[in-house]
Structures are given as structure tokens and as C-alpha cells.
Image (cartoon, rainbow, N blue to C red):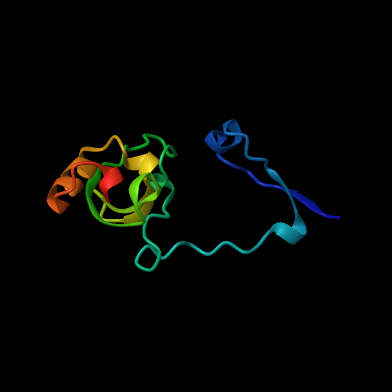
Length: 110
């Protein structure tokens, strides 16, 4: 089998990403269309890039589930919207503001 070595950035190699791949695993590279798939540029991946940016939570939009099993729809300062489990947002001021807006004193009352 043919194995190819890719010239990966040092940062990815330092994170333990292998640079050798079997030919059957490789696909042609097509540049990202940021209009269709936002948040996939190299500098937008948390912790990567020359000067990684910290992403801030703008607000929590909604939730599904109850109590500590709930998941929250988070709007980031970049405009991206993702879902996050309670464990990931429990410390955020945005969660306290969201619960207050709902008139709920604690997450276990959701």
C-alpha cells in the first residue's frame, strides 16, 4: 500500500497528529466556502493558529432537556450558534442571565 507523508504545520504535529496516511484515506482538498460553512477557517478553530483567540459567549438562546441534563443553544461573539451541555456552560454569566429571563432560580428547576 501507498503511504503519503503530509507537510503539516508544527502546531498540529505537536498536538500528536500523525503526518503519514494511507492513500485510501486521502481526498482532494477543496477550500472552505465560509458563506456555506462558517467557523471552519484555521484561525477559527479554538486553540489553533498563530495567536489563538478566545471565543466569548454572547448569549444563550434556548435549551432542550431538564436540569443538569439540559443542553443550551449558545450564540458566540462571532455570530456562530452551537449547542453545549450544561457542564460546559454552568459557569457562564450568560446562563445566569438566561435563567433569570425565564424566571427560573436554578438549572434544576428547568
